[in-house]
Length: 411
Image (cartoon, rainbow, N blue to C red; front, top):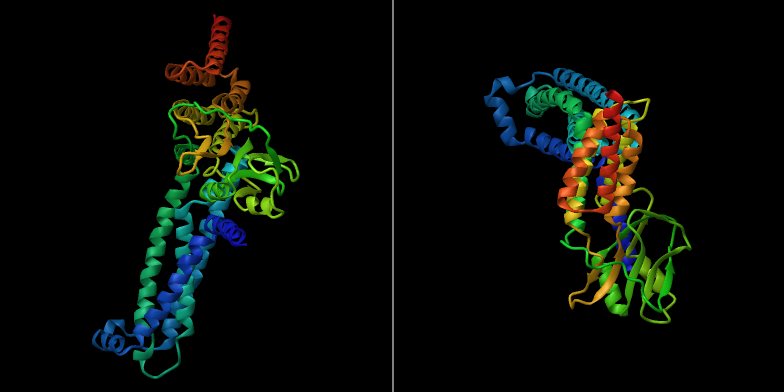
């Protein structure tokens, strides 16, 4: 029961922090609290004394304060609509020319969410402040300090808007998006590929029990500490049949278990609490998805409708750097407990599988393009210097033959 609640909380937490509304909501709540504090300060004895001694802080009537606040609210709403209408246009352009799977790199940008939150927070602050103004005789009771503070926030919003225009135009550049995918994939690889040698292959367990998937979706890995503790408690060894990012169907085999010949009725339900099967994928938990995104960007750039070899070359360069890291670093497949006993055996994609899936499609689409062939030749030559891999050598020979053929046709 507890593990089920924890799994649900993990899912809700990931969905919440990944939402475009998360940071704006936090900032809006902060501004709401700030407005309450500022109004209290404005009507406090200390605030009244400040306004009494500083005549320029005094608003003589409530209608003036209302006019200022109403104008600010209208202006910031217009600013917000304009800013994010522009973002939506740029998102549509990036999705149509690159891949719709790169949209999360733009929507999930924290700076854009912060600017949106600051706009919304200013509006929340202004509306709360507007509700506190009353028709009274003495201007000292009009929230003048809070109103002037709102004017200061508006000036900051304007500077945010100016920088936002520059930032958005830079962030939707193809190289910026590709570099973001590359950096996220690299960080994911560094967490997963920590072994310097690939000495542990995938093991098939003898006399094992097959456990099927508890639902359909994308297998996204498992909770390491929780599953290790579960295996230790039950004295079993688990071996997964598929790598992370594989589509599975409910009722089909998902993993093998070596241990008890008979399990309690609640065993599979308890085990499923540590296995993540969701719809959709994310690079943070599966670096292979990042490699595929780079491949898709390159392939789409080489399509006749787009015909942008420059973008394909940028993707190739990022893929080359990531594959060079993968050649020298390997994922740990045999996960051990504190006593050094193997309890979980994960299934990982080999370098050959990923190379075929991500480099060969680019070769298929770009084998007639001189620029792509030249870049492929350079990247494959660099990879060959790191490791004599059969697939790298094979594709390098094909590229060299294609370049030689083009030279002959030119001659």
